[in-house]
Amino acid sequence: MKKTGILMLNVLAGAGLYACVSAAALAHAHPVSFSPAADTVVSTPGVIRIAYDKPLEPASNIVITGEHEEPVDAGKTVIDAQDPSSMSVSLPPLPAAVYIVKWSAGSSDGHTNKGSYKFTVK
Image (cartoon, helix red, strand yellow):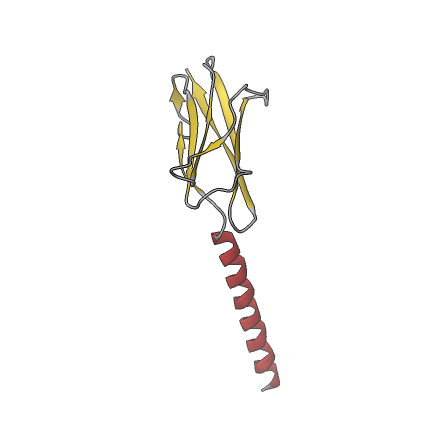
């Protein structure tokens, strides 16, 4: 009986920890759409726009680099005042090349979710 009680306590503790971790992960802002989309070939885009499933905090940003990490002179990241779950950055005309979009999305839980994707300008 004592071993069964200890086993049950371990199972319940594990389930509680899983629920806490899952709830924390769900509180992060996750991207739902990218423009231009990942792994696409496009004419030079004037703007990079990323929409998320939650409102973004002011520290959220988008950085554009070339394929070999060379910086691209982009504008300042702007969180849309009408839709605070969307951010964008203006771009100058881009020459044909592969580009990397690096994003950092802060959310109300105080945590930051990060990621990146590529697109190609023809």
